[in-house]
Length: 263
Image 1 (tube, helix red, strand yellow):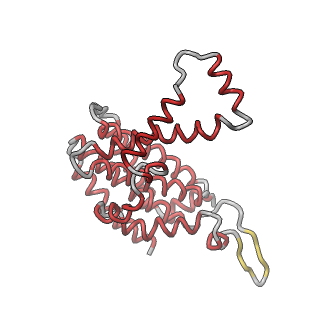
Image 2 (cartoon, helix red, strand yellow):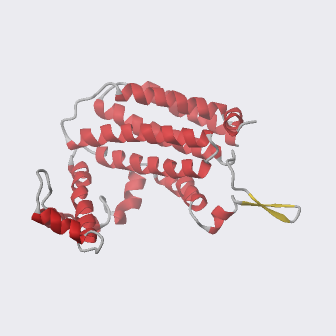
Image 3 (tube, rainbow, N blue to C red):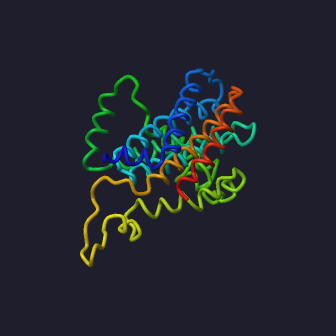
């Protein structure tokens, strides 16, 4: 039996729920809301990004590449945190912070490469032969420095203050997921000792490598994926006032029923 068929048979409710959620998400995206504020931009981006990432997760799961799917499921958590932080009140402050961090990222990139022996000649040539649309690197670096001064030293490394992460997660009701599925997936998908357990099996005292596609842990990836994109879609419909609340609640209730497959 093919891996994809096996996964579908063992997790049929979760698969169907994920597929239904994709249709709902695409409906919401195709409403083409007006983008007039930074928050509007973040909310629209979040669902579009979540929709594409969610599609990649389902493709990887179908191929039996579960760890890679789980990595992207963790990306969905980051998207969910982004949209919830930016919509937690009526202020545009967090969304502006998010957009402003792009200056810091570009500044760090330019600083790293402009004096590097592999790129220094490129930068010298750029200064000597400017082209239309070239960015003023010193201006970007100065702008980034001003932003770090405004927000604090933590802004050098992240768009929101990581020292307040537990506070944010609690207020946004994401702390339970962060401490359970997110933490478990972090242990299982990176090169930690726990992740090695997925690659070897002791069969009659002989170590067998488990390096091919398989269906193990597909359920956790499916639950994580649908859980996060439901939350993103909910923030989207609330923000743009599309009256999809009943639909989202139905999906959330369906998720509770579908997770019983994993018990």
